Amino acid sequence: MARDYYEILGVPRNADKETLKQAYRRLARKYHPDVNKEAGAEERFKEINRAYEALSEPETRAAYDRFGEAGVSGAGASGFQDFSDMGGFADIFESFFSGFAGGAPGGAGATRRRGPMRGDDLRLDLRLDFREAVFGGDKEIRINHLETCSSCSGTGAKPGTRPVTCPTCGGSGQVRRATRTPFGSFTQVSVCPNCEGNGQIIEDKCGDCGGSGQKQVKKKLKITVPPGVDSGTRLRVPGEGDAGQRNGMSGDLYVYLYVNEDADSDGTASIFFRMLR
Image (cartoon, rainbow, N blue to C red; front, side, top):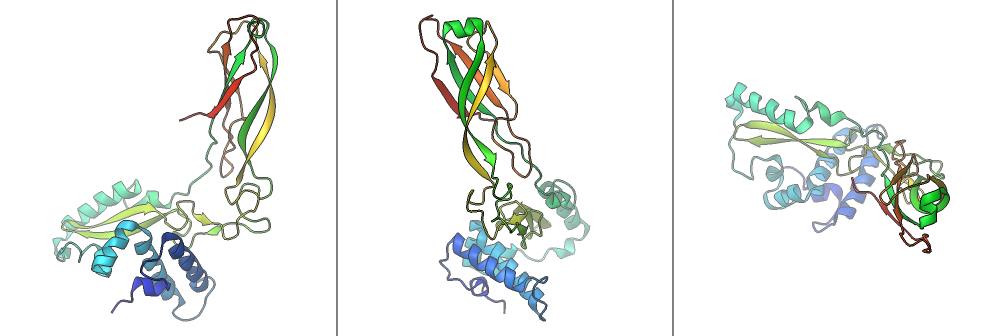
C-alpha cells in the first residue's frame, strides 16, 4: 500500500504552502542522490518529489485529499478504465497533447531554461516653463529605478554562496505530469512549484536585496532639452530604466515634456512612473 503523501513529507494534513516547501527542501537536500549514497536514497528522493508535486498545487492536492493517490494519477478520480488496449489511437492523442504542453512533440519545450530578461522601461513627465521650451538647455531630474544588487551581483544569494539547481525540475523550471484519459495518456507541463520556474533555488538569500538580486536606488540625471520643443515631445535616455534580471539589458527611461504656456510659470514639477508593457 502506498504511503500517505503528508506522512512522506512529515507535515500535518492542514499544512500551508510554505510549510510544505520547507519540509520538501529539507528532505530533498537530505536524500538527493548526489549527496546521499545510501541504498534506497534515490527511491526515497523520487517519493518525496512525487508527494510534493501533488500537494504543492491546490487542484491536485484537493484531488489527493478526496481520492488518494488514484485521484492524482487521473484514473481513479474519474472512474476511467484502462484504455491501454487502444494501441496506436492512444499514442496519437499522447503525441498531440504533448505537443501542446511542451511547445513541440514530446514536450521538448519543457527543457528550456529561462534566459536573461530585459528590465522595464520607465517614464517621467516633466514640465517646462515657456523659456526653457523655446531655448532648451540642460535639466536635472531625479528618478527611482532598480539597479543590480552590488552585494550579490544580481544572483540574489548571500555573498560567498550561489543559487543551486532545483532538485524538483533539474534546472528546467518545469515539471511534467502524466494523466490518463479515455483517449489515452497525455503529459501536462507546468511551472515548477519549488523554484517557480527559475530552475534554481536560493538557500541563503542576500541580506541587502532580500534575494531579488535588485535594489531600488534614487538617482540624479542630467538631460539636454533641445530648443523649440512642444508639449508631448518625448526624450529617450538609454539604459536608465530598471535593471534586467539574469544579466539582461536594462530598460530605457522616457521623458515626456509638457510646456506651460504662461511665460512666468515655474516648470519644476515632474511625475514619475513605470511604463506598462
